[in-house]
Length: 163
Length: 182
Image (cartoon, rainbow over all chains, first blue to last red; front, side):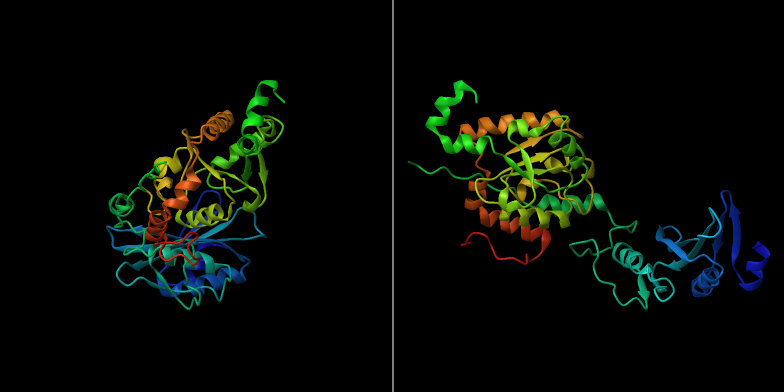
């Protein structure tokens, strides 16, 4: 597969090839389903990771999908897309890759991004509810720890009974 | 058996029995559990000290908390601790249960474990060596002998404070209070 092939089919997709056969694609968010299904038909059937990066200065979230294949050795497709921080919504890819569900739940819980179409966005790791999702850059962990864990009083010692 | 200890056996057989049968519940938290397999197997052989791992909390009376405690783990720890029969002894292993350790600014890891369940002894270090477990065990023996390992009595008498702290971090707990709260 050549770069030209990909750019011919999809408009406004930038392609870069790094060492170790890593193909990095950057695409707008409404094209990801098309691109992922295109690569799935090409043999990249294994979704190995979805992760998220918070670019707070640019006011954007970057969502990264990593696909691998079983036929060609050591080839990774890395698809990056950006969404705005204010309206953190993106389409779910659970219909295409079923194993995307826990990744999307995790990102929903830790970054507060809603995935449209994922029916199971329930709590996964956390036991408490946080005002700001804790993996966002504007979540001040030290302040939170000081206020929350510092406010829990120690248990008083047992009074000894008089004999 | 050590002949010099016969006196102690005759004087307080229950205490001696508790001392030499510290059965540890097989509960893994964090990274400290990596020190436990060499301790219980042939290299250090904890059975010399009467410490063996058991599968269920109902059989155990020693609770080693071996690493950082996240909120989800805390729930399991409280449940396991309440299932254990008395007398029960807890030892915090590593620096994370003491004051958070390297997770001192983490949003989801509790900092002071003794605010939620009573702890009889601490082993400081990151990681402590396996020998430190034996130092803790022998220290626990002297505490039991002198009636100073009273964590479970503290839990019974101060239960409302412990329960209050537990509900403060975990929200409402699903199970009923172990002891009556007035």
